Image (cartoon, rainbow, N blue to C red; front, side, top):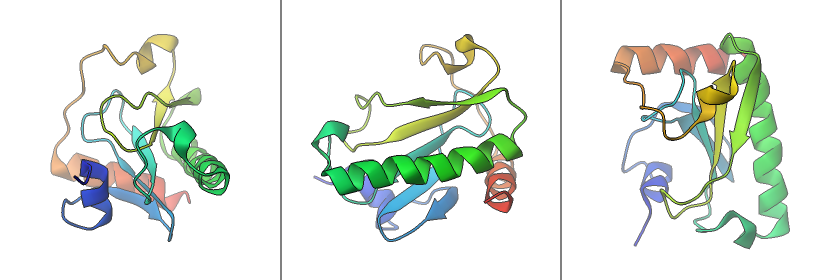
Length: 130
């Protein structure tokens, strides 16, 4: 059964896309910890990040680095944190979260809510910095 991320890749579920190429996709997390919380995924559906082949694994991290540079320019923050948890969706993915303190990236924190317009504005801000 296809993961929700595979359905996003296939265009069956919409997303607030940041960037895409033939192998990777970056989009806003719709249950963000902070404004600008981005998910970066390989288009190839593999559950566990360490099961990715080496080329896909290193490519995912390189693509994530490009996104994080734009994210830091777009969102006022001290750092962009990177997290690989992998329990919530059975599809390898990286969380990029703009942070100003360690507590900003605590997954136990209440998720923020934004309007469609706020998500679109945030995605546009990040895309402009790519």
